[in-house]
Image (cartoon, rainbow over all chains, first blue to last red; front, side, top):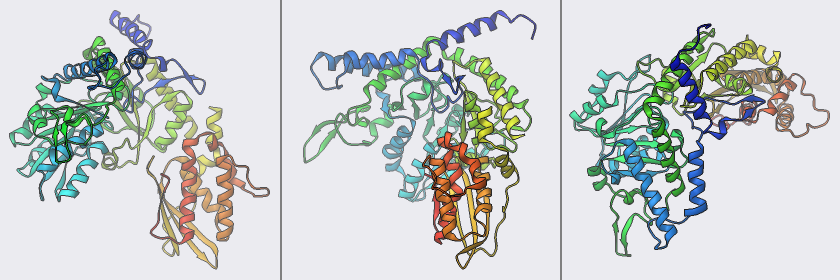
Length: 417
Length: 149
């Protein structure tokens, strides 16, 4: 500890302080203590750039899109469609028409379930998901399977929180109509080998939807390299506003898909005899969209690009490793999820203390974490716990925040003995 | 820390560690299940009611310290009481947690240790889950599942 820090460490520390200056919400006290925000898997704080982009839209360009002949509407439309292009580039998609704006990951999955899978799912057919899915990648499929008389099949995971790939391949068959798989688990932090899993599914002729909600803030994603059929994510987990997200879908799929909701903007012409639907992506964007959300999300992705996802990944990987060691030094702590590759999230339980109580005590120390089942009750059941404590890291977290987490956990031990 | 000691008083920590009346009751005349979907707390309350008196009460389940201690202390506080008296105690307990002035003269005794929970609105449901479940069991609505959400 007495050695002077290496040059690289100083540079990294400097960098993170500069980044923190961009996030107004980080600079506040809670319960009289500096805020230590480690609930990033739930939602991230927003940089000034995002807040300003949303404000700028309302102060200058506020208008509806795709309609007006007037200047404000043109500016709003340009900004909205430019946001689509930003998302396309961020995901490595070839064509902006493959990017559909949604309310978030949940709506993206429901859209694919409804418009792509429903028409091709018959009685006895199967939908294949993993045992570590978020409720949002379980329930839409359950609803659909129930309606169509189809079956929901589940790929098992091992004690560390890794998918059992051999079982996965065995579960794929000619009745499988879609695979829905999470890229990074919100409850365990597991980074799944989605590229390999997509190739396996495709070898069986099965399309794949990837839930990227917890991946896009932490890893560079290239949908063409993955060769996924659908990729969904939420803006608010990657420093953008809530209520906006995107669905990437291969053009060939989107072209043959039926509308998700009916309304304005998704049509070419309407008469009482019939309606001609608009082309993708507009076919799936009925009604006035979340314009300021799209613009804010684009600003967030620009911000992330400016720092660079490789830098972010390296910083967060180091934080996660350090936090894992720090937490394991406290007596009676057990990790839930120690997969080969993890990102951002650290899930654990403490002997004799319920996560909810840990959450309250940490909060009193200014440390915000998530305590609960993380909308992944089957995962909790798999590991025989009703809830876990989850600390999840973002690009603006620091070493001293890990110290605060560890100190808070020591206090928990003091209270509970 | 002092705030935390006010919330997690010794008696709460003790009942969390060694919950009283925590067993499955084979001869129960009534029972009900309670669930807090927000945090996964689950409690099942068993009652043996004879002539309107709670002769025996027990519970099973798992939850946070507030929930477990509250359930344990509840069983102690209503044992031997009539159903009407138990409902009155719940009312007083509920009023204490929601900040409504408790009715004059109502003795909450040990239950007073939960007063600190009032400062933590998200935790109030942890303290009241067992009581709502007890209410359902006293109503005799066996199939009724109590949920805090």
